[in-house]
Length: 232
Image 1 (cartoon, rainbow, N blue to C red):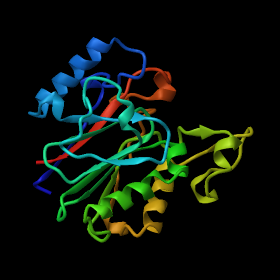
Image 2 (image 1 turned 90 degrees about the vertical axis):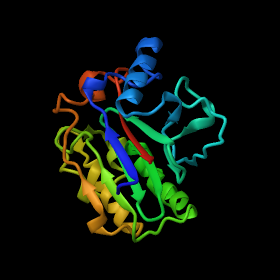
Image 3 (image 1 turned 45 degrees about the vertical axis):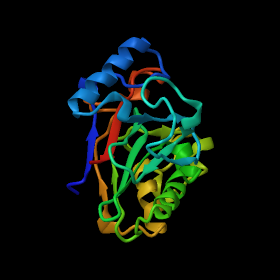
Image 4 (image 1 turned 180 degrees about the vertical axis):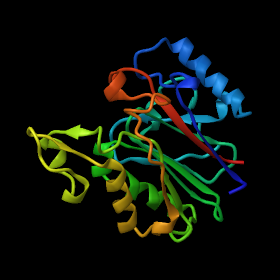
């Protein structure tokens, strides 16, 4: 994977999201510091306008989006795919599952934001289709499911649990169940043809680990950390 690089930020990189409560200038300064840390230009970064959807977009170097400094409606989606060098794909999270896909042979990379709604709406399936359209091979795709809220911390009501398979849920207690969002995505990946040996699970609970922001712990309109991947 010497041509594909990735980085997971944490609280030390501060908030990277423009769409939640924070001073815009401070957020842009945080993004600039991160770019310098990765030895990249801030203009190389592509930040989605995440909209709770199944939409996956292919990013090309000649796209005219203002990638790094504003919320762009042209990037309203929940996953990004590219096979072009030096485009840094970004996903911002705080409890949701940041998912990384890459094919080191075809040089195709992807990021996605898998909250429970995105998971139900098959954002993973649509992204794999875009990867395959860029000549990725289903047998060569590697997947990493990064830190997110764990089953022990993720209590949900019936409007959510009714949309998931029983083996990713705990028993009902006080009209609630706990949801294992990582396992649901893992099982979906297997159903889509990804090899089990090609899936890596990072078992870190963002709700209990203070190295990461958590919407349920800190408040839903507060900070976001990010996951970043690019082809060198």
